[in-house]
Length: 441
Image (cartoon, rainbow, N blue to C red; front, side, top):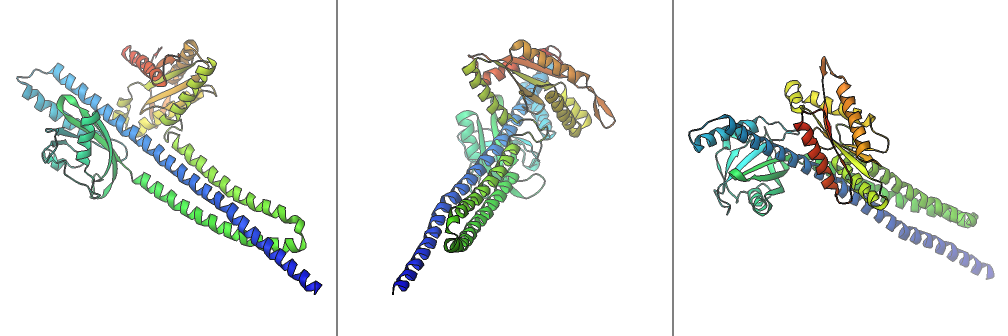
């Protein structure tokens, strides 16, 4: 009788121990799994927003540049011509703008379009489609704020509301791609050119973003499923192993549990490594390998905070390639891309390890020079300028002569980051006016 009771006690002990291990492993695994899942989703959202920020910056820059071109075109036509009436000038100006827009080439199948608002209250004839390279046969047609896309969005109504509120607007909708009947997800930026009530717009299709997020979402689901299988298999194997160890080697129990949770942590570390790689791509300019605008803003905010704490000043160099448009027009955009990449390499080679360089715009570069006042920054800028001037830009059979104009600004407690950038930009503008290939600061 005594032996029977002892056997039953041991069975209860082993079964209870195994059940405790299974329950404990399950409850300890669930928070780890949920944490991995939420971390991946958060990082996926951050990646999407970072890419969209870059695209917003791209289309806004394109519209700002085109408005500048249109304004300059108007000034040139008024200076060089004599017109019998304002109607004659207006007809010539509209024709010239139409030719300018139709001849504008943007990356990723992009284009500029212009709508002229004739009734700010909206309605069936609130605007006229003035220029539209994707739908040239509709130029001159009336537009309606009641028009809907395939998802029921009313892009013209949303555009008019944004223009009336702030003079500019970003929006998402669905529109056909240029040269085809494919309807795709698109993001646009529109800005009012007030002298003529023109809404000047451009956009980019978001297929790549949608596909990337869909792909990453599928990968997340697959990772979650693998994690669940790994947890289940690990629990199953652990129970078998622990059953043997409880019976034969109870003193090894703690070691097995430790190894189990280490394997779960390794899965989390692998996800972190993958995210770090994605983040690196999102913060790097794809053409030059330099920091992009978003990443540079982060460094500038950190550097200004350090300056306010320690008093160690810093400076900015804003450089712009001289006569870059003529390179694209004469030799093509591939030659222009070569110049941009080669010049980025020269800038990087002439900076210290602790300094930062970024591609700020199409042919603009912004450099952060740490622990430097105006004199030191001017020396660095002049070193870069001379290096560019003396470099042979060999592209195929071409030997291109390239120069760089730079504006310099140094931090003070009164200047914000944006004001410091504006100061460098003003100095750059002065350098352009003085003849280019010069450092101003």
